[in-house]
Length: 148
Image (cartoon, rainbow, N blue to C red; front, side):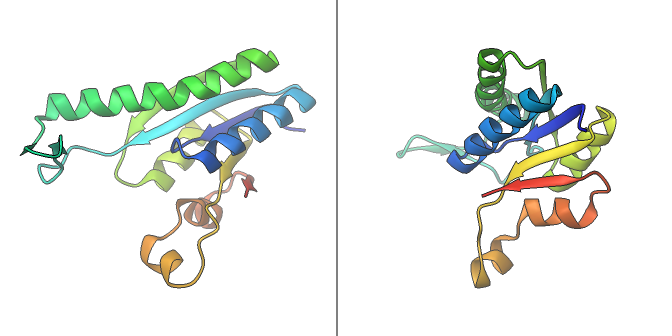
């Protein structure tokens, strides 16, 4: 069956549920997991605010903020895998196209399944916001299991 499962996360509640389901599946089939988080590339239009003042972060500040964010969300996967005694590795990559980063990560780590959440948007919100899960489903040659 499956030997290596990629678990992309965005840190959302739905994504956390998909993490639990992916790790349960990995445990059941004896697979290892790799957690993945895509961080956006630096753009000068991004700002940090405290409610009163706004400032553009430097490229270094931007990288540190997103590195900390990735660590936070990936640690959720590590903890869950440790509890369930499932072999786990995690990593993140910088990309303004999360779906491409997810597919590239699965290929790079030689994963044979991608398990990810779907926010279940429909209609105009799906059209406007798009769906990284949908894009992965369309473009991936690796099987994708979608959790809702």
